[in-house]
Image (cartoon, helix red, strand yellow):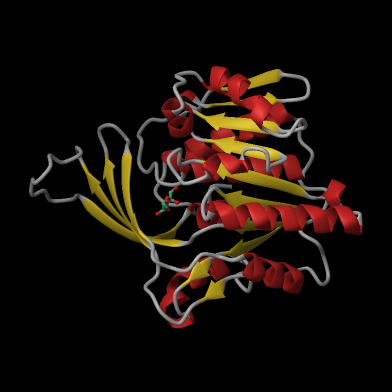
Length: 311
Ligand code: FRU
């Protein structure tokens, strides 16, 4: 797989929550109340936005920016360093003097490839005011080409998207900006109010299944009318690949995942897929090419531990 040479720099901002991940690798998922020894423990920085940016920053011509609400600067130092080492800009993060960094305790079962995640997060939500101040500060020279929102902190995210949309419209650069939203967790409060907020929308398999669908294309067809009339809508489906619906033409695109000898690490596979789509579409690839590239990228991620050298 080779990413084609980009035409120009794409300035991409991902808004979401960074996490410290503690990943225990076990052969099988444990019984409740059992005692079990793990084969391996990995401590690494995570969170959907951080994972996506770590992958994106590996591609040529991408300027990657992270916006996350964190504990104190000292406490968050390690999480930020990992991103900065990969040239992800973190000056768009917001710090609070109290509170621990969000952390996730993840049980990765080798036999099934599942990753069961228990997260702890008591940091303050990113407000509209935080978002406006940081976007203004970071776009004095160049505007963002792509702003991606994790489906969390939903009511604030809606206001942030509306502000950005309006600003770009009034200043005449809305056609150079893509706004994407991710609906991964079906039970998150008010999550449906993000459905019509993205030019590009990412759904998870979990989201589709919980809404009563067992096939990605059926889910996409049913949910398309709740998205923007011009939206491009993706749904990932684990080992079966991913599907995309172009709402204006109703055209469906499907791509299988690539064959993998051994599933090593599924944490962040969906986040890697998102990175592939952002990269491909920023470079004006066809939907089919971007989808296939992203499925391959997610597959390569699953076959290795962590996010390094995916490109
Ligand atoms: C994987 C991930 C982890 C993080 C958790 C947060 O997609 O982003 O890195 O701990 O999900 O929900």
